[in-house]
Length: 481
Ligand code: HEM
Image 1: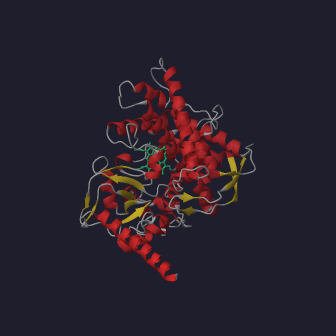
Image 2: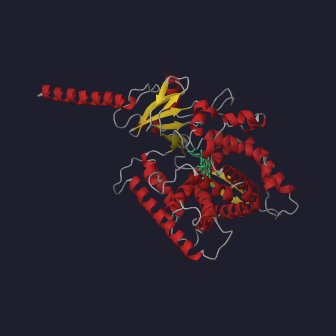
């Protein structure tokens, strides 16, 4: 009996090993591949990457492989051949190649949720990308901040902080996500959470949970809930767009981002209603997770570093005292004078590394200069810019939270070694807005409220930054005589 068992075991092993070799041969297609391992059949090395690490450092999956294979290595994630690069020169090359040999891509789980195929694909390069980028910069860029957004952000943050201070404590990451999403949704399509029957923030929260789960679409799974919320959110956006299209005939200028898109639909033929819906859906996602993660991490770091909090508070008090009228709104010049606050934000962005890998799909074989290997068409490249942000040659004691380090740093060194908002033509269109939002948030918080940490978070990376059971903070209004 045991010999039959042994035969079965050997047969399974032979199938397993031959499949493994076939996999690697299939991947290479006659070219020399970057060094690395494709891991196990089907799952590749996925489990190593999503295994949480409890440090702000670069994920051990990437760190170990850099030591073993160098700055560009191959792997298999979720059944897809992937090349991971921490090589700054090659990363810049990849950014510059957008639309030629590579294009924006988010793994299969993401691609099903963010439309990356067909006519309403949102990752297209060329005039559509230019248009989407332009309209975002018009509504969220420096000029818009100067002309109207700064006092609106100040008021919105104050309203949220007042509501938070009416509760015994709040989980800051969750509430900050809703705050930023609701503010941006208001600018994008006039969303009013008080009047809406749908909780946009809850929908995006479920979508995010599902994206980080196994893509098994059966009732009860996180992925199923994510798909349902995706459907709900896109339906809500479709209905909103239909209402606006029906009511916007007489509006010739002004309004929100969607009003402008509706006016542009006549001259920009690629702007179908479905594309606008998919674009809005992805844009809201960009606003949901990013700023809130940095704000949440800042609370954790500030509560552990009282000297930083002290200098930050002093700077915000000085900004407040410089105002001629204490009730006058903040201005662009006030925001630009918050030097130390911006250093705290840079340091939190550096350590938080909230976009740990930017993905591109290879459209044509790429021969990597001076390395003797080729990345075949169809593969995915994961550009990891954050390795530079942990380089001890540039950032002494890189794991230390030290905002003062930015005082002495040369702008040229910063531009080459700090890119939390990505690079090239796809660099974040919300970067200035995000910095301004966070500065204004800390201004309102530190000049009008007090806060106490009730319970800190267990910070993790999988490789996305995680906050375990959250950061629980009690807020209270300051009463000034
Ligand atoms: C701390 C906050 C944020 C971080 C760290 C961040 C990071 C990034 C990164 C790394 C990219 C490039 C993605 C790639 O190359 O694959 C990106 C793109 C983008 N982000 Fe952000 N983002 C933040 C906040 C925001 C906000 C608040 C908005 C909207 C108001 C926004 C809008 C966009 C848009 C529209 C793009 C696409 C740009 C293009 O394709 O030309 N981001 N962001």
